[in-house]
Length: 148
Image 1 (cartoon, rainbow, N blue to C red):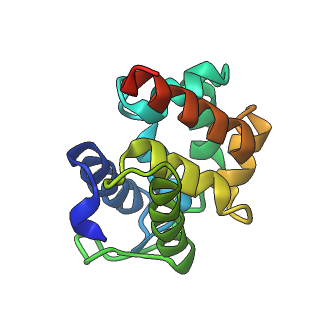
Image 2 (image 1 turned 135 degrees about the vertical axis):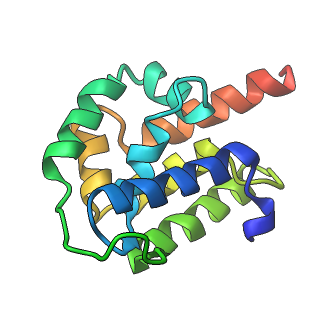
């Protein structure tokens, strides 16, 4: 599945690793993935949030205030939490549902929103980007890209 992740998707995952390090934790969760997605203003995920009227800056500020800090040793290898793994699995499912043979930032965002128990999903809902409207925005973006 990792081979299907786009360059921008991989960059987001690497940025999520850096976010986890910044918060002094050894595991990458949905919140770190969302923080990473919010960094790239030109990604499909960013366009999806913009279409939903979500301020990336306000969402990031809420995440920054809410994500717990740890006491991990610096430079220790980071791995995904169970919820982080579920986000990747859900992103793959979203890509398949869209008949995409890749996993991009849009699929990662949908995976975060669909993993409903996480802080990241809750904040997405509170900021006006619950999973169902995000699905519609994704379908619309993909239709436009395909010229339909």
